Length: 428
Length: 173
Image (cartoon, rainbow over all chains, first blue to last red; front, side, top):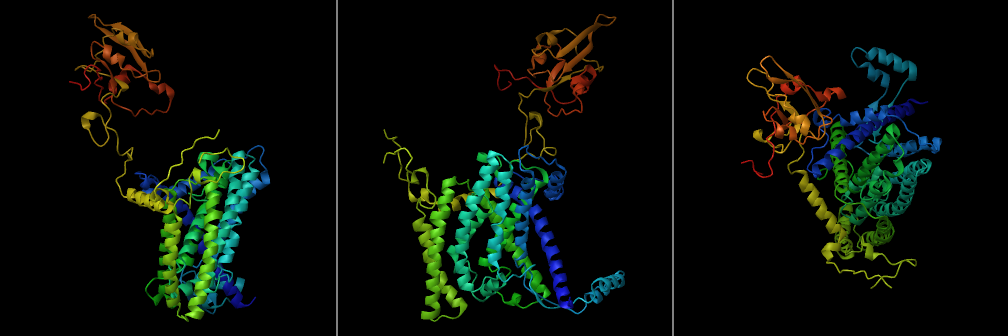
């Protein structure tokens, strides 16, 4: 193995450990934040007993979940019952690997062992060990601040995020309980329905940036405008589908505690339940990070080009900005959860297939034509000018969607349902 | 045949989902910064009305009993037997005794607080104003038998006593 490959593996491993740790700790703190936010919105304090202001509550919860008894329903399919939480958990954590958390950093070292030799006291020992075990490790170049800077970018996210539903569907089926099964089936149907709208809502992003790699999309937004402005409808469709994909309220049909007890994880206890929980929150982080990356410039600091040159200060500052943006979106997720009631199942399906899908499809057409016209007919080549034109177009489209269309048609009451063949006749 | 369902025409502002959502979000966001209503229990407690604070107990509150004592530290009880007689839950055990001067006093006076229904009849019937129900609610113990309060324990209680609410004089005047 050449020293360069070893260098790549070393750097990736370090990034992997950092991202994995931050994700898991962040997810734990998110559960606390969820409870705090819900409490504040209901005139309560939220957990504030364990540690300062309840900061150790997630640790207490985790400890409790680890030492709790694992229960198995008598008629459950043991193998799949054990496998399901893992199948939900792994894709959720995998997704964090493609997100760009900060500006790329220039890294140069010829020999990692000698670099460690600079550490006082243990340096000499470390150098000897590293040299003996791995030999020379070299890394030169711009290191993207993502564990894997995949060229397939958001296609990877779309592909892997829908894998998570296997875990949920299997959990529902293998529990051998009516509630779990219904929850699992709902999750499957919901995931498939909204996957379509979500994929289509990203086509305009692809058309505008000309690339699916997340790094390139961020670069394109730095040169032009954040995509929230020229692609507002896309953003809206993506956000709503994101809520549905993560099974968060108002789309938490798979759990729906008032109807299905706890849906697909009714029969789960202890750490297996915890893994579903972590998966849900990790998915939330991913969707928040994706919204940030695709529509809010990723780690881009607005109104300055300082962050585009590589450097440690830039990397730290952009990481902080990225964190803030993601944090805002996570708050938004919680905010929505504690504001909106749950949809009825037919409303959920109607919204996915009859509203979001046509909107996303029409939007692909409109944006495609608009990009063609601005680039080839009007001859606008500067990304800022082109996106500005698209922004103006979006003002009109936004008015159409949110004011004209939203007159009892986005979500209808029970009367809005067309009577099916088997329904009792209804007076006009 | 057909079921007459009245379908109402609603104004646009009522059927617009996005507008309703934004309205709801504004509301919940505003509520986040309003004062909290939770009592922070071990730090904040409900106090009897005399020491009125943020949290007060109702003057009608009837909690675990207390036996009052006279200046010499003896219980005021004269073992007349009225309280075990009136007690609807039959939770008071009283064995009367008599000293050399002919004063009656309780040899055994026990109240089983688990049987007690906290009606307050014992306090109402007591001619000596000896037994009282208390304005008190923190009664946790490690074992069930600790809930049979004997005379010594009843006399050692220090919490304020209830001023029984009189329906004919609801304001206590």
